[in-house]
Image (cartoon, rainbow over all chains, first blue to last red; front, side, top):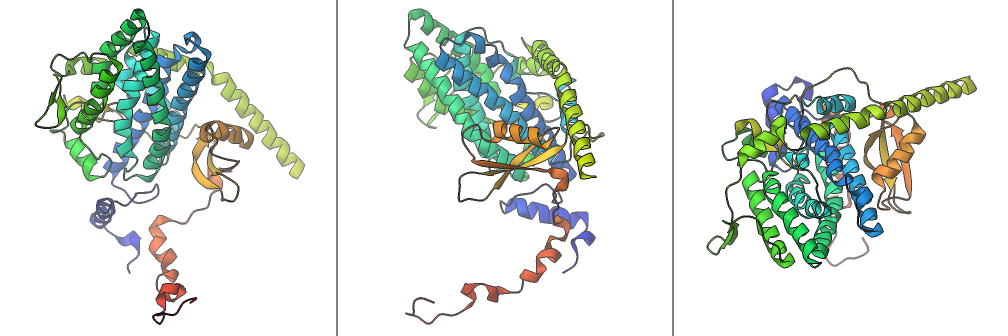
Length: 321
Length: 118
């Protein structure tokens, strides 16, 4: 058998595609097309950024959680989001990028994060709605990613999905308590659903039927289902939950279609999505400024830890000598 | 809409118009590979990696990052730079010696029908 080094790019590409088509996994040091590597770096890094920025809207309510129980749950959930970001940055780094570089790309706005985190959390019910809807939508996206062709991303997603289901359930439970509460609490719950429903549907992204990128991601085994398929699944799963809560989904066109067995729903305002993605959502500047501030405020801690490590290493070397 | 042909895990992010191949100088703290023993009787298994200035911080960070739900009873951290790995480019040649020795497996041998304990 000829040594691998002499294979042409065509042959390498064919072997790569065969492995992906056979539902095999690609690992960090395997040969991979440059486009595949770039697509993964972009997707995993921006996924990580979303988790990191995603701590802010809910973190806003930690000091004002209505009970100690809710506060403990919320702290654990926000800590999980940080963890998800770190699993994902690690996965991205297996593709040859540096962590600090990825943080720079986030802090300078050159890479993006999910638009959903640029909406404000104006009441406690928003924390409940985020767990229920935003994490519910994330689960729809993330479960298929556990079978992604790139091993480190798929493995990170397995951990994330296990934790994400706690996030969704605690949100639904908090929403149920409000929905069964006083009239004022019911109004809060309905108001949160009214504001988070459409941005949650936008989380799946625009219809990708015409997108060459999506087709390529599918061929590479990164993406398994279209944005529209995943969105439909989310609507089908969530509408009965809203009915159970006795809340009204803010879509006059929403109806169950007996013929297809799916819920039909109204038009999504993609101009709003584009506006928020571009940087002009309600909280874009605040979110990024807070992130950059937190990073800069932590600089002295990183410097102190590095100085301590250098000192200890020096001491170890002297003792060994 | 093509600027926002979105893919993502926690919500759509752009797939065009964002840099994806920055390979500048490495500035991050050292990288550590993390191995967790999930319970006594099992071996340590690789779970991921993290950055930390030294081994002790790496161990503490690994506890916070990888065992928030009692996933482990013991953790190893190993400086990623110290890991010696076989090269995937040579994997066929490297593992070739085992390729033609099916007689190392019990299934290589015929066992007469009806006989047990073989």
